[in-house]
Length: 278
Image 1 (cartoon, rainbow, N blue to C red):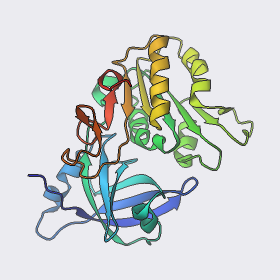
Image 2: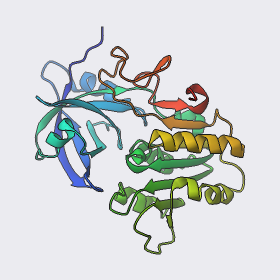
Image 3: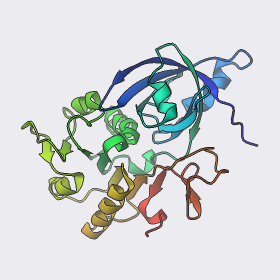
Image 4: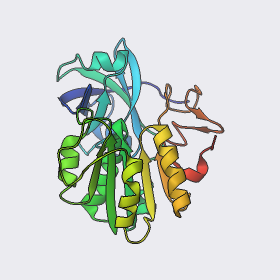
């Protein structure tokens, strides 16, 4: 029997980060009948790439990726875009409000398998969020041979995770693509989409990337995965973070069904060879 009762979390603070988007900071609260150790144990073992369900009382709950997994004190972060009733109400709240959270859920990025390899990460729009913690972890532990990031946005106004990308570009190659409005002439800004800059980035590797991590609109990820396989990268080396409208997060409601798999339990991270090709 699954326990679907959310844990109490406090909204610590937040800041705007892109059009209709905010980066939220939360803290797990202790519950009187549960020791801190027991209460935080499963959260402290959160894997990069997993997700959680955030509950806004009387408005419902919705799934979000961790941009920073819970630390030993229960603090964690998530990038959230204002899209529906739950997020609209969340954007009206002030710091200090008490909410609910369930998690962590799903399969994260395979950190042991990708360590010390040539890695290419590609994110589009809000899809950069699931990549934040993996890029931070790789940089922090320096357990990669080569690491590059492509990030695509519709316009400069819709670019997200600006502080993170600003910090990363001083450590690894970051290629920002913008579809509309032009670029400002920066060394790492390019007109177009991730698909347009991909051949240039692949050439910069010298040898082919050994791992590719994709997150963003599904059509974008599928198109890029097909291109990468045709380019010579194994379909076992390409990982995608698949978004679905997850309701229960424990594989019982069927809202996130992908043929014989559930995005909430088998994913959200899938290898390209594991996904149906329609």
